Image (cartoon, rainbow, N blue to C red; front, side, top):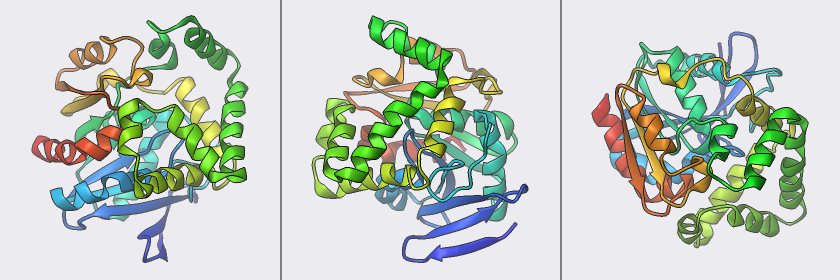
Length: 298
C-alpha cells in the first residue's frame, strides 16, 4: 500500500487498499494524540470531521476521517455492505502505523463505526456514536404513517433513494445557498441554531458537496448498504460504547426508548441524552466531552 500527499494545506492523502482502490483521508487534531477514526454521516464525507477539529486539538485527539467508497476522494466499491467498511479502515490504520484506536460514528455513519468495532475487536478500544445503529424499519416505528411507508418503499425499491439524493445534488450545483437551506430544513432546531454563523455553515456545505464529488454513485451505494443486509450484528460489539442522543433528533431513533433499549442490550454501553441536538449539534457543542470520554474508555 502507498500513501500520496495531495495537498499539505488541507492535510489530505490517498491510501491504497489491498484490492487497489484508494481511500481519501484527512486528519484533524494532534498527530501524537489518541487516535479516533471518524465515520462520517450520510450524505457526508471526511470533511464532516472538521466540526470536531477544535475539540480534537483541545482534547489531544488525533481524528482520522476517511471517505467511504465512491464518496469524496475514495474509489467506488460496487455491491459493498456496511461490514466491508471494516477492511477499508483496517487498511487506513495499518498505513498510518496504528495498532489500537477508537471509532466515532456521526449520524448514519454510526452503523459503520459499529462494523469496525465488531470486526476488529482486538484493535478498537472504544466506540462513540451520535445515534443508535438502527435499521430504517426500526427507526420508522413510533413515527407517522408517511415515515413508515417511505421506509417500506425504500427497502422494497432501493432505486428510489436516487430521487432525493439527485434533488440534493442539483440544488447544491444550481445554487449552493438554496442547497444549504434545504439541508438546514431537515436538521433539529438546536442544530440550526448552532449553524447560524458563516464558518460552520460553510463547513456543512463543503461536507455535503464533497459527498457528491464523484456524482450520485457513492451516496446511492451508501443508502443501499444502510437499507440492506449489514453483514454483522451491532449487538456483538464488546468494547465500551457511548451513544450520544439528542432529544429532538427524531431521525436518530423511531421512538423515545429505542436508543435506550439498544444501549441496555450491550454489555458495556451507556446512553448520554443531549438537549435538542442532532448529530451535528452533538459534534459542535459536546465534541470535547465525547472525545474526552472516548480517551478515558481506552
